[in-house]
Length: 298
Ligand code: NCD
Image 1 (cartoon, rainbow, N blue to C red):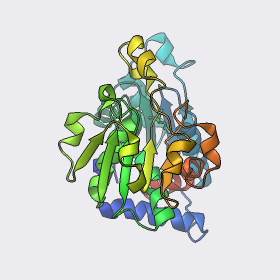
Image 2 (image 1 turned 30 degrees about the horizontal axis):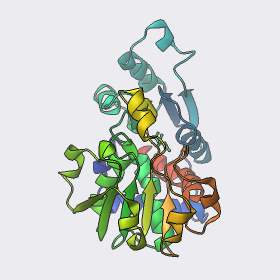
Image 3 (image 1 turned 30 degrees about the vertical axis):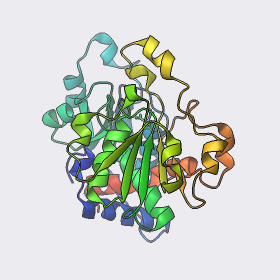
């Protein structure tokens, strides 16, 4: 595997291979060892889970980690451009994990760098390694990804995890995919038009919630709103609370890429459907498996 820029970079077989490697790593059957390899983190945008789980994953497979999780303190502050920063990290490491506020930044880096680039989120565009974690969680809970009803809920316009998940699902056979959002935050046409399955758009979760197997909740992406007033109008309109969860199937699950702001009531955390912290915990085995593949070990 070379660069990981989009969920489209994975075939169904490649998704399943990462899941299988993550299983083997978690069960102790596979002990990846890529000693001597160096992984660069190049995070130009804030991150908690993605940066720390990539670093943990790298260390656990024997690689060393260099780079930065904030451009503060780097030569970016002196005016060094993105391309030159990537060129330096390409010299020092075996793969570069990039997060940036601009759509297309990871793709641009992959055109400069001979070393593999992993997109850890580019603007409102994609976040493919989050989709690996999302679908691995589904696979762990249900034993498969095919044949389930998904509902993506919240900010479907600016959340890059939504784009990557919708694209990742083209590699599987979802039964139904509902897109639930306020009208202003509907999923992007350029993404939904190209999918190989039907999506059904709704404004109220109550119309479909009793059919849903996987409820995927996203934060309103405040930082990507062109207009603060628009954000203020919408910010608390979409909430997963105990009342909504009461309408869900007992064996359904709630996922969220996190960070959660107010869109899931904290009281929901105790419900059996709440799987978002478990999902976050799977970031380490999934990223171990992915780095192992990218660094040539798998
Ligand atoms: C997501 C992101 O950065 O896109 N976070 C993450 O990586 N788990 C989701 C978000 O910020 O809302």
